[in-house]
Image 1 (cartoon, one colour):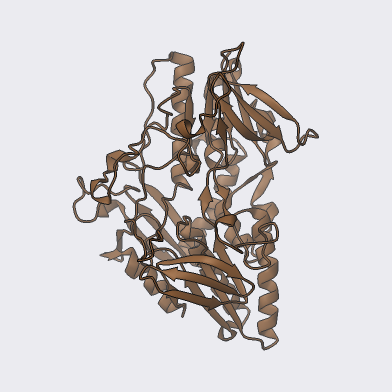
Image 2 (cartoon, rainbow, N blue to C red; image 1 turned 135 degrees about the vertical axis):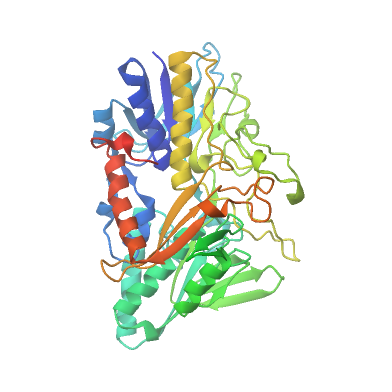
Length: 489
């Protein structure tokens, strides 16, 4: 019997574990180690954050789902990888610390034949002074990165709306809270949902809503922007995004590194070196992401963390980490199999793999401060990569250690995104967009780096219905309901 241990139960880890259990059957064991008792459909957190959904509608208990699937579930966080085993045993293992099951604080060594690091990100609020604060739940700023955070954000937003109804003008600031943030899309959706809810409440004229982002231009989204077909024309994402903000009366600050947050005020530095301040009554700023802090040790107990993980804490995989200057970057730098180059039975998927470099052009202020989005690895790509990694491992278990690995390079992968701009059965809107490939390939597609025939976007009520349907569809899939495996990632 072979044992596959999956570290993390988010979109990518859950996808990898459930497909692996399906393909391997009862003759082999799949173990999921995750600190959370519940699974969260993160794309709908923005609706929780404006009070249009409860956190119960975007989460469910993992234990019964894994029990039905024959997956061993350990509610614990991974502390370290020991890929060579230890003195007296060659069996590799991961050290975990339980966070539930009545065993909180106790540790265990979980042996494995194969391991997938799908731990996702650490929400690195500490990278910006004052960001979040109060257990990251907002003396200063709020968050929608988890269901609990989003529920808290909704409560704080409701207070702001009540103040406006009482005649008190409010300043709202939404965006990114550091110069190296990713996940601009979540903030993008959240600001439009806030604007929509405030308009529904009849107090839009009492709100000053502003966007702040580390993108060098609106519509960069961490992928260097894109050109897409819209209404029969090839339109840049910059024009597309600017039109959405302009139509809704939302001004923007871009190329900004938020370096300090105080009560009611952010301090930031711009790409031109200018320093600025912005006051707010309510602010949601996405924190930067980092690896969760996994350590690695060799058989002698020596720390080999820097050999296995990149400096940002994400696992090294089959990427070209030595591409150097921006002019040297190529689509082929990006990983295909997500296998660690040192240990062939170790893989990563989702946010947990270390990208070779950003997708957007790197920029610095005259003061040397890097300001630019780090690459997004969430949503559809996370699911596709998780499934491909699981497929590779299952083939090696069932067919032999020399079975070829499956590939899922983001440079050969398309992705779809439905970005909500306000929830409502008849007045909701969303921007439905596709991009192919995610990582631009300028050798294959000169000029734009992408195939414009497969990169397009439209906004309207139909997009909202699609996003709402997808919410229920992917929760159905994640709960492993009948036919779940037929639903695409």
